[in-house]
Amino acid sequence: MKKVVSIQDISCVGKCSLTVALPIISAMGVETAIIPTAVLSTHTAFQKGWTFHDLTADIAPICAHWKKEGFHFDALYSGYLGSFEQIDLTAQLFADFRGRDTLVLVDPAMADNGSLYPGFTKEFALHMAKLCGKADIIVPNLTEASFLLGEPYLGSQYTEQDVRRVLKKLAALGCSKPVLTGIQLEPGKEGVYAYDAKQDSWFTYSTRHLPVRYHGTGDIFASTLCGALVRGRGFEESLRIACDFVVRCIELTEAEPDHNWYGVNFEQAIPDLIQRLGR
Image (cartoon, rainbow, N blue to C red; front, side, top):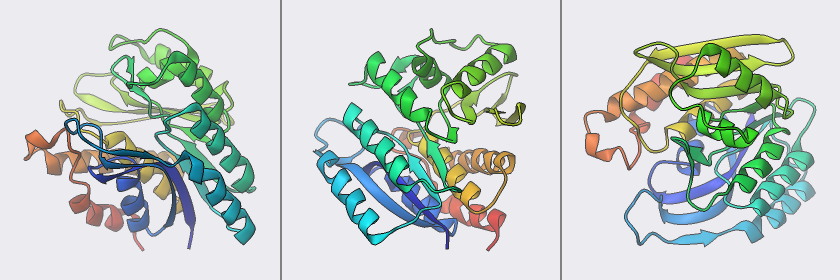
């Protein structure tokens, strides 16, 4: 059985980060190990009062034990990281557990809609860019890409040429396959645009644009992409699988519009994902 390790926070209630990565990748038939960077009572879209326990001090001892046991992973996948130290510890994880055929995927979850998440700075984003340079695949949105590159945010008025320029600059960080998410190049369509620097080739895939925004969909996309790749699907097919799964999750959630802050109904979409992958 293939094995993935994911490093990001976990919310006891709410659908994001490890709370979606663990069940989705496991359902795809891939053993999923985790390194929780923090434990929250709920994700932060809930009203004030949620609890937070930082687990940064536990990351190095966990990795040391794993090294002693000789564990091997087919993929290393990082999501939301909350500090400079966690970025550095994740970089060390990559160095310690990256084998010849190990996939490294970074979701630089730190910004959206032109702004960084609370508590993050431009300096943090540039430090995250160094981690992205160690990855095979990164999956930023346009806001995150702008901060990684230290450039102005493109907003909603951009061309395909703009997207390609940004992707090439992301590849120059050291990542061979950058992917931009949430790309809208034609009315009624939204999807991903990717660049393979080794092949100097481009790939784009769009689904119908859904005029809603739900918490945690980026985590679902990254987790599904990771699982599909580890299951042996090609890069382009894996992107299609991940996009289609996110759309299906949103479709199942649209009947509950008040839950957009809570997360999407990915659980009932998992049978469709399993059927598509086969066993």
